[in-house]
Length: 402
Image (cartoon, rainbow, N blue to C red; front, top):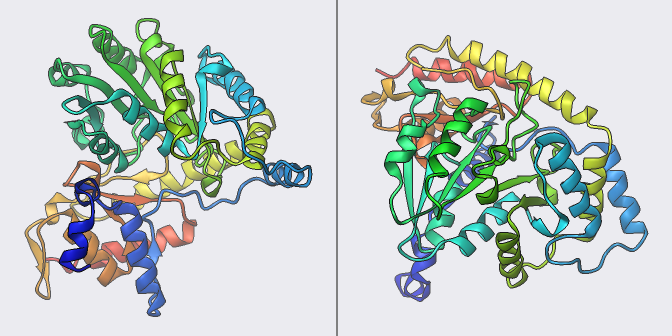
């Protein structure tokens, strides 16, 4: 882009970083287009198709003429289904007026940051974090405060760390569990400790991103909003992309105190308005019908997790934990920093990702995009054959680094 053209762009968009996951996926496509056999483990997208009964519900809704504008916060049938889901699966009590359906959980989080944050405010983000968290906070003119935990802590921030990071400018605490990018799951006692910290500060709202709820290998998902001392200041975000393999449907939702839900509806009404009608009807059907396809998908992901962790632990100098949810591994690869091959120096995780793409034809994402520059993220939303081949390629490639 020419300098004169750049000057016409807002400071806001020039400050905004491109999504690292989307960028790496495009680089992989470009390399594949040149005839190379590229295995892409960069995007957080289930490789399963949307279950047939959900697609059938959408088709029926289309045939019945469900093609018009919808209420900004969602169709009543879906909001009611979400209320019932929250009560049934999460022990969370909401009314339909506390539910806001959006065009993906990403929009739900954007709505929240835009309605809760002002210039000078701070948002504490438990790190590693999903790439978009910090950028949305910046778009809201607020300051992201990253509180980090490395692999030695299973990538989970302690309550003591959180307490030390809170100031009189803190307005939100934002995190995901199960976590993207690490796959770590905050257990009940860990969430309770975090809740006890936040409860001491009356001006802080918790945003709990639970989009990976159904890909949880612990046998029990816990929502921080169930703790009495923070239930009135917690927003629970979820959606259909991961647990129902509905990424392209763009449907997310939140359950929030009335005043926050009302504000998010106001914000969304000026940006996108309501989500697609027939998609919402299918989503309501997904929540109200047989969950067997979701459970089978989780079982497949757990089997792949076991395979990937086992194989990656055979790679010298890779530090790999045992993620308890989502579909990612997040190895610490810092032992390879300072090495090189054929003049290509590996100074950081970004260099290693570029090296693996060019030399091994495996696409992964640098941990620096997630606030953890010693790591790389690999998605195991791929076949076991692809995963086995990809990790073998990685092992052979890094063996060349000296």
